[in-house]
Image (tube, rainbow, N blue to C red; front, side, top):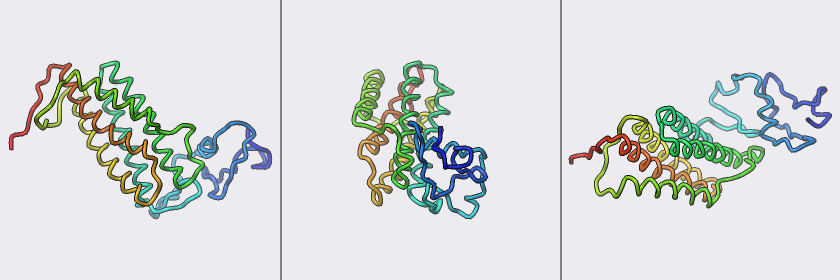
Length: 220
């Protein structure tokens, strides 16, 4: 699988479960560089980040770095969607959210690749993906109808979790916009994250509607 000469066994030279920062993989087949990096994850902790540093491939940065923050926000957003999924029963909505989770993993890899190209995913967020999530939103929007008042978050059967995920999506977008001030962030990826919060807002309303939960509006 691995090019000979990388180690005595032909495998990546992992030291204590950590890939050397200057390692450049030389694979003999179509194994991706990211798979080479993942090969070395034989331990789930290394102690490497105990002093506030982390490694993104070959680059060592502060854990407060905006790029690290952006990756973390996307990870948190994906986790929020996972929680929502465990509380949703609508098959179509679940299928769409599962696809969105996959796209968020791609987005995270795209951001990591800004610092180390070895993390470049095999595919990227495209304008077609943006159009698709807009279609999801429009489809559910027709089911829930127009809105001329603010809506208080909450509701059973996953609706409240979708509201929570929406707020995380908004925060994620703000951090990725901040990232774009220092790095060349893909425009389609940024647009996708922007549309995602709109989709989650409509999805939360949709779940309440199909469960006959009346919307609550703030009084101010």
